[in-house]
Length: 178
Image (cartoon, rainbow, N blue to C red; front, side):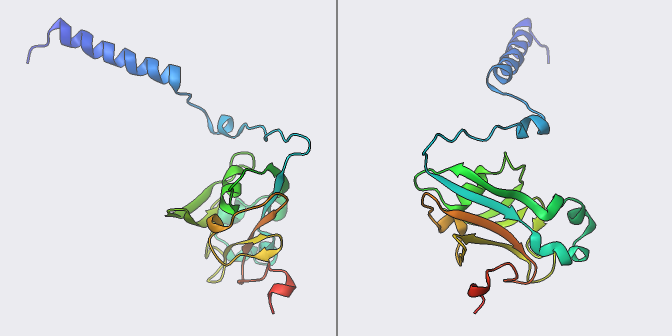
């Protein structure tokens, strides 16, 4: 098939258009650039919520973990110490976790649909990584939530804790175990 100068020129023009759009509208970034994030400014007197993410329950069970997961655990077994975030109307405990993804360098794996999501792993620490009863649980204001975190609407001042449990319930406050 013989190419005419017109089809070659059109091909180059299309390539130039695509490259121009990528340069103009796209912003390729490295992993370090992706996580270079300034936490949001919280105005004085603004409504806030607190979030923490930890796997402190693993302290005595580190040998149960696959070496790749064990080597990726954070120092002190805390992914995110108690941190204030700006409250947004209608936000859920799941939304708050997603808001912390960049500043806390979290990789969150979840599944579900229609506002009903299940967090299966955070930074590759997954359900069953430390045995048949291990996984992530959520407490809001010290109360264990027994449904999807995406179904729990937050209020200003709420404290949300994502905790990894090795033996279901080992990270629950004692009054919840009765």
